[in-house]
Image 1 (cartoon, rainbow, N blue to C red):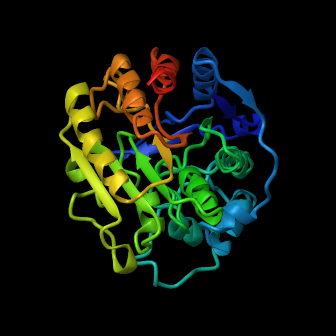
Image 2 (image 1 turned 30 degrees about the vertical axis):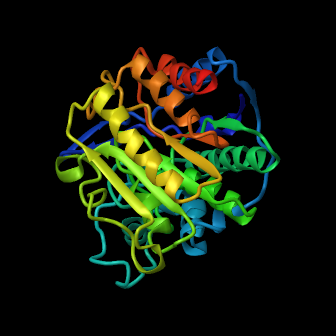
Length: 340
């Protein structure tokens, strides 16, 4: 399987985030890269660097206002007397239609949904190349490839068109899916991260040409809280093209796989021609976030079931945090797919 990763993705190195009112070490660490690279290589992947497709495919999902913010906010933040070393918001608008301030502090609150997406010196460069890796993966499938993996780090599925959140800045899975759609492919995003892919849902929620499906821990008491509930089905032209399948905390292999079959039934009904899998390995029983309880063997079963669709598949890395089995879980899902 062909895989894509650029060394500039190492440059996002956040030190902190805030959770439950406490400043904590950021779990989205660069060390994830080495664990995931090792896992991809163990699955037989050939890892190459992506070509630079430019800003256009990213701007096809994200607003120019937001992209300008991402490119400039760190430098602007350093000019604030007494500011912290990373851009973390402390105030937010009531709605997206509220005023757009000129200040760096106000714009941070507008464009960062929470305190779990700190922007540091190398964040924009890493996020840009994370997206380029996903674009290269989409181009592989457009050229006739049957499967690919993109080590997109930082991840992306919590990023909206104009807002970062949950360790995510640009929505790599959405960018890849849009790239495939532009090439005439009928695309689906299947999100199997422990957290709901709220940014991806938001990007495509009013569109009828893209199906989004997410299997995740029930957000009633789990991040992202406000999105990911079963009644969210899309709006306007997109009504009926969004499917959320929330699971009780602690759900294990068998129930997860039963729910995955429900997801695949909807994907078939959409007439999908290609699938982008937003691959979160944080559904693992030993992941620090402890939302679900999928085993390493369970990930192999997930990969094999997805292979049963018989469609080209692009795996785009989302969550999965530092634990001894992180790389092994990636090997498991990719190997399960290739043998499925």
